[in-house]
Length: 330
Image (cartoon, rainbow, N blue to C red; front, side, top):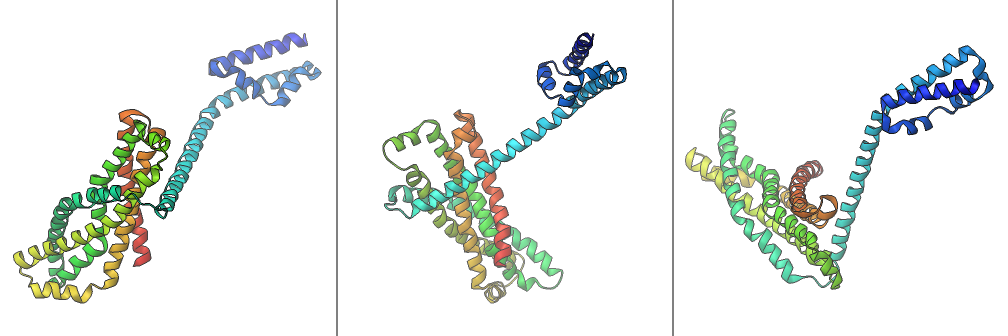
């Protein structure tokens, strides 16, 4: 009789578990509390009160496990994604370490280096000229009408100069270079990864870091400060075009006050920022292209996804790093 009742209990519990989730019946049976199994299979099953209690405990545990399992799956997925992101951060750090390490190992690929300077620097000049001129004009308008409320329109020159040199020049130049050159670098290296050209370089005994990453890194480190200087100069003259020629601020007042308030430390702050932004752009864009087939999938879709991630991540890191640089150098 005991065996018959035990079989009925397990049969009924199996039916309820099947109704909850038929695909995980055996798994949930194995998850039952061991005390319940031992109680049901022992001689204590003769007690009617214990029969009802054990039967109710089995059904309650089955129902509660069905409710808690989706939450445990969510926690598992969240933990797996967190570990994956941390692993990618570690891979990015090692990628930058290797690139810096190979920068000091001769010989440098000079042909590739000058080609990337031309691509990142010279071909971005037109974009920098346009954005710098109109950014300075906007600052001239906004600054004049804001300062005139307090009778301080004579300080338009220092305001435009400091805003461009310390903040807007490095940040906007870096964002423009990211959109124009960084995306192309990520796409180029990503296509080389998809078409197995990087594997061919390794088979020929060439180091992909020295041939693809180091020239881009050095070119960006040199080009970004120069582009930022062009942006600042054009922006300052754009502000003078609006404030001096259109709104009536004298040239002596505009440039004289600027010379009085803009110091060398302010100029060096902008140079430091642009230099670090160049490292960020080359690092992130080369990394996304180099690992395009691993982290973003294969084919044209993987290249497009890697390019998008490179531009977005570079832009976000530029703004975040700008905050930390400002807090350190202020």
